[in-house]
Amino acid sequence: MAAAAAELVIGWCIFGLLLLAILAFCWVYVRKYQSQRESEVVSTVTAIFSLAVALITSALLPVDIFLVSYMKNQNGTFKDWADANVTVQIENTVLYGYYTLYSVILFCVFFWIPFVYFYYEEKDEDDASKCTQIKTALKYTLGFVVICALLLLVGAFVPLHLPNNNNSTEWEKVKLLFEDLGTGQGLAALSFSISSLTLIGMLAAITYTAYGMSALPLNLIKGTRSTAYERLENTEDIEEVEQHIQTIRSKSKDGRPLPARDRRALKQCEERLRTLRKRERHLEFIENSWWTKFCGALRPLKIIWGIFFILVALLFVISLFLSNLDKALHSAGIDSGFIIFGTNLSNPLNMLLPLLQTVFPLDYILITIIIMYFIFTSMAGIRNIGIWFFWIRLYKIRRGRTRPQALLFLCMILLLIVLHTSYMIYSLAPQYVMYGSQNYLIESNITSDAHKGNSTLVVPKRCDADAPKDQCTVTRTYIFLHKFWFFSAAYYFGNWAFLVVFLIGLIVSCCKGKKSVIEGVDEDSDLSDDEPSAYSA
Image 1 (cartoon, one colour):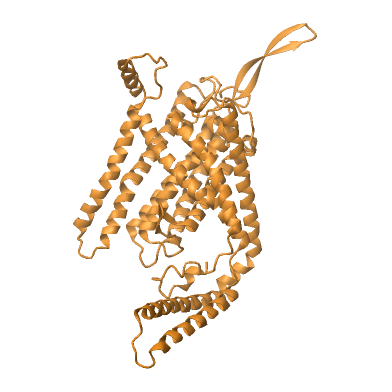
Image 2 (cartoon, rainbow, N blue to C red):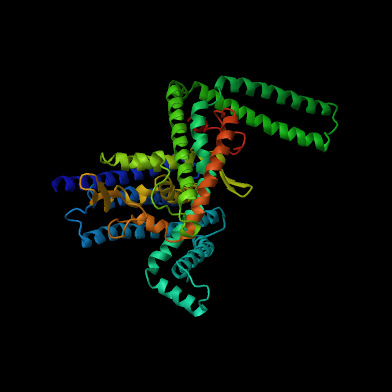
């Protein structure tokens, strides 16, 4: 009993340390990418807070799995202290934790982040007062609040089950709807809203995470172009542009004015020359920087990390493919959200997690690593692709030069992607996420040759979707993610899209050349000349 209590205390201590690590990570990450010239306290605090809430929510997943597993022994029996009241109390504690965090996420997504974004947009207007900024921001934010209210109402009233009888009257259908509403409408409403955000997060993960899983490791392996070679190319370009400018100006030596076409060409060449000279200053600074020499010394380590990340990506892709294939072949169908009764095609992660669970707390460390891996690859994808609205690029994410509006968009996207990681982990290890390491007892008939008859033996079996409800406790995460079958079906097809985009991103990343050490100087014409260090990292 003392050992079990110590294990529980250790688990909560790890969770506490994880919270501190999350807050430190969010602060460092936001400060790393925010613009030093345009930084603002409100947007910075909002970005840190929203990103931390998302990561803390994802950190509840290993805690949820730990608690449902902790209540049972490996032989399939409940522990002495785990009576019905204690079990319900533990379940409610985790459920209330999800209620709180998901409510905060809805507040951030549908009110606070849009309000801060529109407030900062109005701040650019010189003649706008504080009251005008607040009123305008609230006016635009009201649309997001209406969308949130509609999602909550739809989630509360949508029926989870329709009458099987096709001849049932409309009154019977309405009656069933209100009966469904009376059985936990709060959970249904919140679950529907969070599932809707998770669906958007799935689209963001398909766009950014799938590409980042290939771009991040391959960029580490390929590295950047040689600074000396880039300086040589840049010098040649400067000479070529200067010669072109002299050729154009020579046409007006006799006092004749230049034609409009030549004036436009001259202006373009002069702008190009300013950009090339600015590149020259940055390249010279980077070549002589101690940071460049330090990064050059770490080049072998980056290659090792790149190889490790690409192997991890392949492990995830193989596990996701096998899990989806298992659902396609052995699930209960689309109208059940492709739920699987048992495990037919085992994937590496689904086998590894229960194995690590025998040595506390290796499985929770692995879950945390998986979540952080998704976050880092998502960040790499957003940084490489940028923030787009269809075919229009809205913002670029650059280290030390990201505008406050872009930072809010970045944290919003990461918040939605982190919400989707819970379902991604479920896709990789469905049985583990649903029940952890729980077993339950079943009767097995054994034929005995000595007595020429059958005997019954009670043996433990791993909990799955076919297990009795009173013998296996489902995690609260699973209840939130799978309360509506149509969301689960959408996640299933989204996983196939994720695999396709990863393969496309892998091909694109392999074909792309090395990145420039000062990538983005050509595009960021507004960059001041006193910020060369922004490119050296």
